[in-house]
Each structure stands twice: as C-alpha cells, then as structure tokens.
Length: 256
Ligand code: TMP
Ligand code: ASP
Image (cartoon, rainbow, N blue to C red; front, side, top):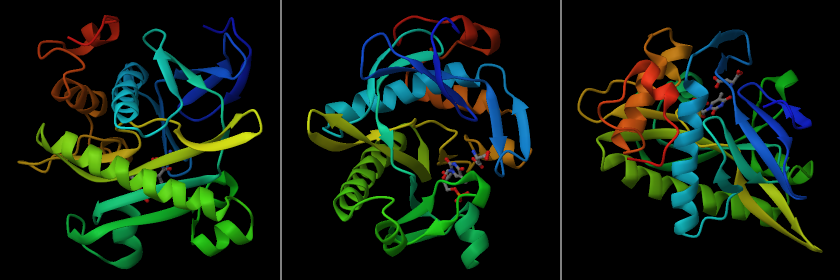
C-alpha cells in the first residue's frame, strides 16, 4: 500500500500518486481525531467503512449530476479519485441545531431549524478552522464568488439528496461538512465535490431513538463508534444485515 508516492497525509486519510496523470489514490486510515487533533484514537475498521460509505454517496451524487472527485474503489481502503486543488473552505449544512452551533448560539441540540443553514469555516489547523463569512472568503481570495455560488448550490443539493436517502432508512441527517476542489481541464477550471462523505463528516441520528450514529460517539466518549458506522452501512445496504465485527474487515465484494 505504500508502494506509491505519498502526496499528502491528513488526519484520517492519505493521498498517493495515482496510476495516471490527474488521478490520486485516497487511502482511508482507522485514525480518528477530534478537537483539532487534541483527542486521538485508532478505531479498527473505520477506514474500511468510510471508504465504502463515501463510495456509495459519491456514486449516487454522480448519478444525480453533482460532479465529484470519485472515480472507482480500488480495494478495502483505497479509492481512485480525480486530483483537484482543494478550496480551503469547509462548507457545513445544518438542518437541526447541534454541535458548535448549539454551543455558539445557545440553540438547544435537536431543535429543528426553520430552514437549512449553510456555514463556512476556513481550513487552517493553526487557527482551529474558524467560522468565516462570504465576505472573508472573497476578500482574502480563498474562493471566487462563482466558486462560492457553486459550493452553496452543490452543498444544498447534497443536503436534499442525503436527507431523503437517510430518511428512507430511518436516519435523520442533522448536519454535515463537505469540501470542494478546483478541477483543471485544459484552460478550464470547474468546482467539484471532493474529500469524503461519511459518518466522520455528518451527524446522523436514528429517527426513532435519537441514537447517534456518527463521530460524536467518539467526540463525546459514547463508545461503539465503528459499530454505529457499520449500522449506517448496513441500513444503506452496503454491508449485509448479518455482517458483524471482524467479518466487516474481511469483506471486499460488491454491495450485497
Ligand atoms: P460542528 O457542529 O462541530 O461545527 O460540526 C458541524 C458538522 O461538520 C458535523 O456534521 C461534523 C462536521 N465536522 C467535520 O467534518 N470536521 C470538523 O473538523 C468539524 C469541526 C466538524
Ligand atoms: N476532524 C477534526 C479534528 O481533528 C475535528 C472533528 O471532526 O471534530 O481535529
């Protein structure tokens, strides 16, 4: 797996040089971090599950016309992606108050928002990814107004699509974070969805019980993190009902 040249190592993923120009291999690690990497753990099997869940989401988003970096899954932990220049903005869409919004604004966790709210965070570890406005983004040239418009409209489409997809399997999409990149094609540049979509980057609550099925289980020491991710994969039909524990780490076949 380390035969290829490493391009970048992040907290949960590694990017390697791809087999053709303009491609990269995205490797999903089992590492989990929270609070700007102050809290760390290795969660056996998380990378395998996130690789599959992100593949599932990106493939379906492609089919509804949301352009993204995913090309194909290579193996349990790796996927082939298009190389993009990551725009240094995390776009968060919220449907229900939770997390930092509840802390910052004093809105109780679980309160349905009057409409979906889009927020922007500047990707800068040294600063702890501060929340920023569109004014900051364009004034400091982190993204152009065109790119901002593209990011907002794609993020809202992802929200509508994923809200329905998860609702159909008894899961409430509370909020999520997405990242975008610049795809250079000749002298053209396009904004496409990049990074990953997984329970690391979404808040997912069971509709009936309110049980958390996402990374908040790690952030808040609730336990059962990978079990919750496996439950998400099971409900989406990515892994079989019967698959448990170590068996999940062994699977490498097509869905179902
Ligand atoms: P927040 O409530 O902590 O701001 O998180 C909003 C959403 O963004 C939530 O679904 C978790 C996700 N998220 C990330 O994917 N990466 C991060 O570094 C943070 C802080 C949040
Ligand atoms: N991934 C982020 C970090 O380590 C934070 C988070 O997801 O809560 O720092």
